[in-house]
Picture 1 (cartoon, rainbow, N blue to C red):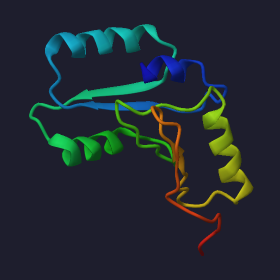
Picture 2 (cartoon, rainbow, N blue to C red; picture 1 turned 45 degrees about the vertical axis):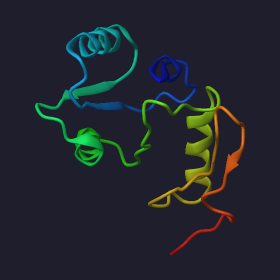
Picture 3 (cartoon, one colour; picture 1 turned 30 degrees about the vertical axis):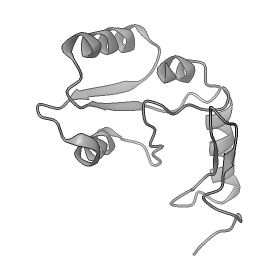
Length: 123
């Protein structure tokens, strides 16, 4: 579970915002109980009707209070416990840009997916 990994992050100044898009009640109850017993700062919202991907994503974004957002699905994870710290350092190193677009590595095949080929700042 991605949430268990987040509890171990070396960087702790973050919140988890989850928009539940009509999961079965038992799954939602399990998630709610797990979050209540975790050390994570979190917001959990259950939609009253299915919004599918787009509406559910927008709902999750509306829950967030921070300056930066990392969008992750239920099949995403960080490489290690220092991944958030490394992202924070990259943001600071670049004078806190509005957007950071990282590359990523496929979990099952280990291949690096290059969404950007060169590191650069856009004014």
